Image (tube, rainbow, N blue to C red; front, side, top):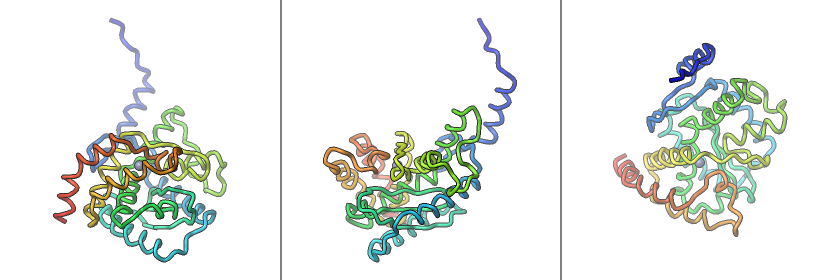
Length: 263
Ligand SMILES: [Zn+2]
Protein backbone atom coordinates (compact mmCIF):
# COMPACT_ATOMS: atom_id res chain seq x y z
CA UNK A 1 0.00 0.00 0.00
CA UNK A 2 1.30 3.39 -0.99
CA UNK A 3 1.73 5.81 1.84
CA UNK A 4 0.70 9.41 1.31
CA UNK A 5 3.58 11.66 2.20
CA UNK A 6 2.56 14.59 4.33
CA UNK A 7 4.47 17.79 3.88
CA UNK A 8 5.56 18.90 7.39
CA UNK A 9 4.41 22.44 6.64
CA UNK A 10 0.96 21.24 5.62
CA UNK A 11 0.77 19.20 8.77
CA UNK A 12 1.78 22.19 10.85
CA UNK A 13 -0.79 24.33 9.07
CA UNK A 14 -3.45 21.72 9.70
CA UNK A 15 -2.61 21.56 13.39
CA UNK A 16 -2.50 25.35 13.62
CA UNK A 17 -5.86 25.63 11.88
CA UNK A 18 -7.34 23.20 14.36
CA UNK A 19 -6.24 25.39 17.22
CA UNK A 20 -6.64 28.81 15.67
CA UNK A 21 -9.55 28.44 13.31
CA UNK A 22 -11.88 25.71 14.44
CA UNK A 23 -14.88 26.66 16.45
CA UNK A 24 -18.27 25.22 17.28
CA UNK A 25 -21.51 26.94 16.42
CA UNK A 26 -22.89 26.94 19.96
CA UNK A 27 -26.57 26.86 19.01
CA UNK A 28 -26.31 23.79 16.77
CA UNK A 29 -23.04 22.08 17.80
CA UNK A 30 -21.68 22.16 14.22
CA UNK A 31 -17.91 22.61 13.74
CA UNK A 32 -16.90 25.61 11.66
CA UNK A 33 -13.73 27.26 10.47
CA UNK A 34 -13.27 30.85 11.70
CA UNK A 35 -9.88 32.19 10.61
CA UNK A 36 -10.63 35.90 10.90
CA UNK A 37 -10.22 37.29 14.43
CA UNK A 38 -13.59 38.49 15.72
CA UNK A 39 -12.25 41.99 16.49
CA UNK A 40 -10.99 42.43 12.95
CA UNK A 41 -14.28 41.24 11.50
CA UNK A 42 -16.27 43.63 13.69
CA UNK A 43 -14.03 46.59 12.83
CA UNK A 44 -14.36 45.85 9.12
CA UNK A 45 -18.11 45.44 9.41
CA UNK A 46 -18.53 48.72 11.33
CA UNK A 47 -16.49 50.63 8.78
CA UNK A 48 -18.49 49.13 5.89
CA UNK A 49 -21.78 49.83 7.63
CA UNK A 50 -20.83 53.48 8.25
CA UNK A 51 -19.94 53.82 4.61
CA UNK A 52 -23.24 52.25 3.52
CA UNK A 53 -25.14 54.72 5.70
CA UNK A 54 -23.39 57.62 3.98
CA UNK A 55 -24.18 56.28 0.53
CA UNK A 56 -27.74 55.06 1.01
CA UNK A 57 -30.73 57.30 1.79
CA UNK A 58 -32.00 56.54 5.29
CA UNK A 59 -35.78 56.35 5.66
CA UNK A 60 -37.51 59.01 7.76
CA UNK A 61 -40.71 56.98 7.89
CA UNK A 62 -41.58 56.98 11.59
CA UNK A 63 -43.67 53.83 11.55
CA UNK A 64 -41.01 51.81 9.71
CA UNK A 65 -38.20 53.07 11.95
CA UNK A 66 -40.21 52.39 15.10
CA UNK A 67 -41.10 48.89 13.92
CA UNK A 68 -37.52 47.93 13.00
CA UNK A 69 -36.11 49.31 16.28
CA UNK A 70 -38.87 47.70 18.38
CA UNK A 71 -38.42 44.24 16.85
CA UNK A 72 -34.63 44.61 16.53
CA UNK A 73 -34.15 45.42 20.21
CA UNK A 74 -36.12 42.37 21.29
CA UNK A 75 -34.17 40.10 18.93
CA UNK A 76 -30.91 41.68 20.16
CA UNK A 77 -31.92 40.96 23.76
CA UNK A 78 -32.38 37.24 23.17
CA UNK A 79 -29.30 37.01 20.90
CA UNK A 80 -27.12 38.81 23.49
CA UNK A 81 -25.66 35.61 25.04
CA UNK A 82 -24.43 34.62 21.55
CA UNK A 83 -23.18 38.12 20.66
CA UNK A 84 -22.05 39.63 23.96
CA UNK A 85 -19.84 42.33 22.40
CA UNK A 86 -22.34 43.58 19.83
CA UNK A 87 -22.93 47.31 19.49
CA UNK A 88 -26.40 47.06 18.01
CA UNK A 89 -27.59 49.44 15.36
CA UNK A 90 -30.80 49.21 13.34
CA UNK A 91 -31.26 51.23 10.17
CA UNK A 92 -34.08 51.50 7.63
CA UNK A 93 -32.72 52.17 4.14
CA UNK A 94 -35.07 54.07 1.88
CA UNK A 95 -35.19 52.04 -1.31
CA UNK A 96 -38.49 50.54 -2.40
CA UNK A 97 -36.80 48.51 -5.12
CA UNK A 98 -34.66 46.55 -2.67
CA UNK A 99 -36.55 43.62 -1.22
CA UNK A 100 -33.74 42.94 1.18
CA UNK A 101 -32.46 42.96 4.75
CA UNK A 102 -29.09 42.02 6.19
CA UNK A 103 -27.06 41.90 9.39
CA UNK A 104 -23.31 42.31 9.78
CA UNK A 105 -20.90 41.31 12.56
CA UNK A 106 -20.99 43.58 15.59
CA UNK A 107 -24.81 43.85 15.46
CA UNK A 108 -25.27 46.14 12.45
CA UNK A 109 -28.69 45.48 10.93
CA UNK A 110 -30.31 47.08 7.88
CA UNK A 111 -33.83 46.62 6.55
CA UNK A 112 -34.90 48.15 3.22
CA UNK A 113 -38.29 49.83 2.76
CA UNK A 114 -38.85 47.43 -0.17
CA UNK A 115 -39.13 44.41 2.13
CA UNK A 116 -41.06 46.38 4.77
CA UNK A 117 -43.79 46.97 2.19
CA UNK A 118 -44.22 43.21 1.94
CA UNK A 119 -43.95 42.42 5.65
CA UNK A 120 -47.36 42.43 7.28
CA UNK A 121 -46.65 42.28 11.03
CA UNK A 122 -44.02 42.48 13.76
CA UNK A 123 -44.10 38.67 13.81
CA UNK A 124 -43.01 38.53 10.15
CA UNK A 125 -40.34 41.18 10.65
CA UNK A 126 -39.04 39.13 13.60
CA UNK A 127 -38.74 36.11 11.29
CA UNK A 128 -36.60 38.16 8.87
CA UNK A 129 -34.49 39.94 11.49
CA UNK A 130 -34.13 36.78 13.60
CA UNK A 131 -32.86 34.95 10.53
CA UNK A 132 -30.38 37.70 9.56
CA UNK A 133 -29.04 38.10 13.10
CA UNK A 134 -28.71 34.30 13.28
CA UNK A 135 -26.35 34.35 10.26
CA UNK A 136 -24.10 36.68 12.29
CA UNK A 137 -24.48 34.88 15.64
CA UNK A 138 -23.50 31.60 13.96
CA UNK A 139 -20.46 33.27 12.35
CA UNK A 140 -21.47 32.56 8.74
CA UNK A 141 -19.64 35.65 7.42
CA UNK A 142 -16.43 34.57 9.14
CA UNK A 143 -16.83 31.05 7.78
CA UNK A 144 -17.40 32.27 4.21
CA UNK A 145 -14.35 34.50 4.48
CA UNK A 146 -12.26 31.70 6.00
CA UNK A 147 -13.05 29.41 3.08
CA UNK A 148 -11.96 32.19 0.72
CA UNK A 149 -8.68 32.48 2.66
CA UNK A 150 -8.12 28.73 2.42
CA UNK A 151 -8.92 28.79 -1.29
CA UNK A 152 -6.34 31.55 -1.68
CA UNK A 153 -3.76 29.27 -0.05
CA UNK A 154 -3.80 31.08 3.27
CA UNK A 155 -3.29 34.54 1.84
CA UNK A 156 -5.17 37.31 3.56
CA UNK A 157 -8.59 37.79 2.03
CA UNK A 158 -9.18 41.02 0.15
CA UNK A 159 -9.68 44.13 2.14
CA UNK A 160 -9.26 42.96 5.73
CA UNK A 161 -7.83 45.87 7.65
CA UNK A 162 -8.55 48.28 4.79
CA UNK A 163 -10.89 51.18 5.48
CA UNK A 164 -14.12 50.93 3.49
CA UNK A 165 -13.45 54.21 1.70
CA UNK A 166 -9.99 53.08 0.51
CA UNK A 167 -11.14 49.72 -0.74
CA UNK A 168 -11.23 48.73 -4.39
CA UNK A 169 -14.89 48.59 -5.52
CA UNK A 170 -14.70 44.92 -6.53
CA UNK A 171 -13.18 43.90 -3.18
CA UNK A 172 -15.80 45.92 -1.38
CA UNK A 173 -18.67 44.34 -3.30
CA UNK A 174 -17.28 40.90 -2.46
CA UNK A 175 -16.96 41.68 1.25
CA UNK A 176 -20.47 43.12 1.39
CA UNK A 177 -21.77 40.13 -0.54
CA UNK A 178 -20.38 37.80 2.14
CA UNK A 179 -22.73 39.48 4.61
CA UNK A 180 -25.70 39.47 2.24
CA UNK A 181 -25.36 43.22 1.63
CA UNK A 182 -23.81 43.16 -1.82
CA UNK A 183 -26.91 43.26 -4.01
CA UNK A 184 -26.71 47.03 -4.40
CA UNK A 185 -23.17 46.62 -5.70
CA UNK A 186 -23.98 43.92 -8.19
CA UNK A 187 -22.44 41.11 -6.16
CA UNK A 188 -24.77 38.45 -4.87
CA UNK A 189 -23.38 35.51 -2.98
CA UNK A 190 -26.09 33.11 -1.88
CA UNK A 191 -25.66 31.49 1.49
CA UNK A 192 -25.16 27.75 1.28
CA UNK A 193 -28.10 25.51 2.04
CA UNK A 194 -26.73 24.49 5.44
CA UNK A 195 -26.14 28.13 6.40
CA UNK A 196 -29.73 28.88 5.41
CA UNK A 197 -31.10 25.95 7.43
CA UNK A 198 -28.99 26.90 10.41
CA UNK A 199 -30.11 30.56 10.25
CA UNK A 200 -33.74 29.44 9.94
CA UNK A 201 -33.37 27.23 13.00
CA UNK A 202 -31.55 29.74 15.21
CA UNK A 203 -33.57 32.70 13.93
CA UNK A 204 -36.94 31.04 14.51
CA UNK A 205 -36.01 30.33 18.13
CA UNK A 206 -34.78 33.94 18.56
CA UNK A 207 -38.10 35.28 17.21
CA UNK A 208 -40.07 32.94 19.47
CA UNK A 209 -38.01 33.74 22.58
CA UNK A 210 -38.43 37.45 21.80
CA UNK A 211 -42.20 36.98 21.98
CA UNK A 212 -43.07 36.79 18.28
CA UNK A 213 -45.28 34.06 16.87
CA UNK A 214 -42.92 31.74 14.96
CA UNK A 215 -45.85 30.38 12.91
CA UNK A 216 -45.64 33.64 10.92
CA UNK A 217 -42.56 32.21 9.17
CA UNK A 218 -44.58 29.82 6.98
CA UNK A 219 -46.96 32.29 5.26
CA UNK A 220 -44.11 34.81 5.02
CA UNK A 221 -41.76 32.51 3.09
CA UNK A 222 -44.66 31.20 1.00
CA UNK A 223 -45.65 34.75 0.06
CA UNK A 224 -42.04 35.70 -0.73
CA UNK A 225 -41.95 32.92 -3.27
CA UNK A 226 -44.91 34.28 -5.20
CA UNK A 227 -43.31 37.74 -5.62
CA UNK A 228 -41.30 39.18 -8.43
CA UNK A 229 -43.33 38.21 -11.52
CA UNK A 230 -40.91 35.47 -12.49
CA UNK A 231 -37.71 37.22 -11.41
CA UNK A 232 -37.16 36.45 -7.73
CA UNK A 233 -36.64 39.41 -5.37
CA UNK A 234 -33.08 39.93 -4.13
CA UNK A 235 -33.79 38.53 -0.72
CA UNK A 236 -34.73 35.27 -2.42
CA UNK A 237 -31.59 35.22 -4.58
CA UNK A 238 -29.51 35.09 -1.42
CA UNK A 239 -32.09 33.18 0.61
CA UNK A 240 -33.74 30.74 -1.76
CA UNK A 241 -37.08 29.52 -0.41
CA UNK A 242 -38.81 26.40 -1.58
CA UNK A 243 -40.74 23.43 -0.31
CA UNK A 244 -37.74 21.94 1.54
CA UNK A 245 -37.39 25.11 3.57
CA UNK A 246 -41.10 25.15 4.44
CA UNK A 247 -40.97 21.46 5.43
CA UNK A 248 -37.96 22.06 7.68
CA UNK A 249 -39.62 25.12 9.26
CA UNK A 250 -42.67 23.00 9.98
CA UNK A 251 -40.42 20.37 11.61
CA UNK A 252 -38.87 23.07 13.80
CA UNK A 253 -42.24 24.53 14.77
CA UNK A 254 -42.98 22.41 17.88
CA UNK A 255 -39.62 23.48 19.41
CA UNK A 256 -40.22 27.10 18.43
CA UNK A 257 -43.79 27.05 19.84
CA UNK A 258 -42.41 25.64 23.07
CA UNK A 259 -39.92 28.55 23.26
CA UNK A 260 -42.74 31.00 22.40
CA UNK A 261 -45.18 29.71 25.01
CA UNK A 262 -42.70 29.08 27.82
CA UNK A 263 -40.70 32.27 27.80
ZN1 LIG B 1 -30.26 33.58 5.12
